[in-house]
Image (cartoon, rainbow, N blue to C red; front, top):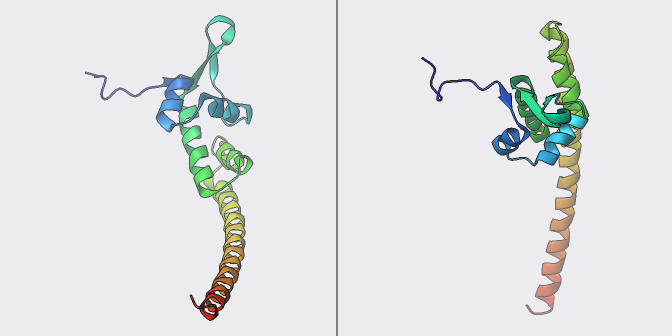
Length: 136
């Protein structure tokens, strides 16, 4: 017997997804505009969005990609590949290429930050030395 506890939900409203993922409905509509989500329409004039379990999974993947620092277009490209019937080899190679590019960008940013931090340390040392000469 199915209970409310073990039933799997197959459709979601925009409010359901907004609540679950702590997003605004505007953000979800933006992801839809970007082609990341493709809800069905229901109600008068098709005004109500009905999101599928697939849309929910895609939203979860988009948010994971954002946490990794990927752009929405990079996220879409990778996620869309998983909707195709191809084997996973090309998908994994593409994912690795995107991750390698992103890693290089992060390493460059890290090097820039380290150089900036080193410069700040030099200025701090100089300012402390000047302050010591002034007597405190």
